[in-house]
Image 1: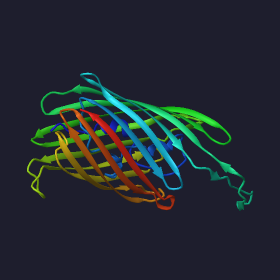
Image 2: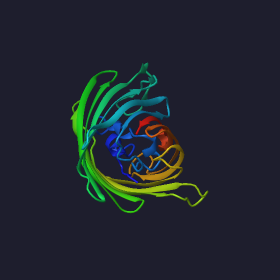
Image 3: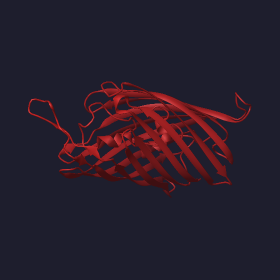
Image 4: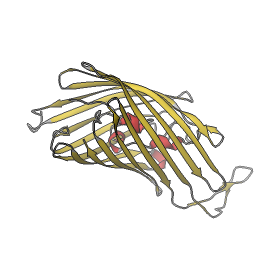
Length: 311
């Protein structure tokens, strides 16, 4: 079973809000990920090294009427190179504009404000070794973002780089190790928020199943993130599915995990989600996934992903 973590490409960095929110240009991009990844504690566990093409729409809804929406396309352009491109937009409801006096006391509401952001990302996976039980690939991504604020505008960009290796020498079990650095860059007079991330995950399928005597499978993983400001975050999570995600039919997945984020708005963040994949024929499939992530006093994040898989 050719399983790995290609969703690293489209999802890094994958950890929700970092500590010290607002300390880096474009830091809110850290919440952008698929619902599959958000539901397992921020870990990318499930997506295979696909040989086909995938069109995917992602949305992130935040308490207070704020939301992100994105559309991406990924596919193989050479036998050794896979490329993905996606664009995204942030939408905010009109919010009260407030301030404070010199002594720090609250000043009355002074009208409404709107915030708009647009951006895009180009990702690549370069497979440098694919012989035997090992597959090794380099990962890279370039991102750009434009922010329109009430009193000013800004633009910036950043790059990320890393790699992943998968071992499939244990039958139906696949183990993946990954690492990533970035985003490194800046804009609007500020440096981007960056981190060093590393982790390991395992996926295994059970042809006869353990619960309902039908094909099943599971995945689990753990990762560690060292943030640029010196904090250490981490996550662990898992997924269990019923069905055959690599053949025709319906597959139902249940996900859960936790994110440990010291000095953030909610230091311990339990997360969960579910998904349904319907495949027909040899190559076609439609997949919908949903995930929920609490954010303490900021409310919550709700993720939804709809994908057309041309496998």
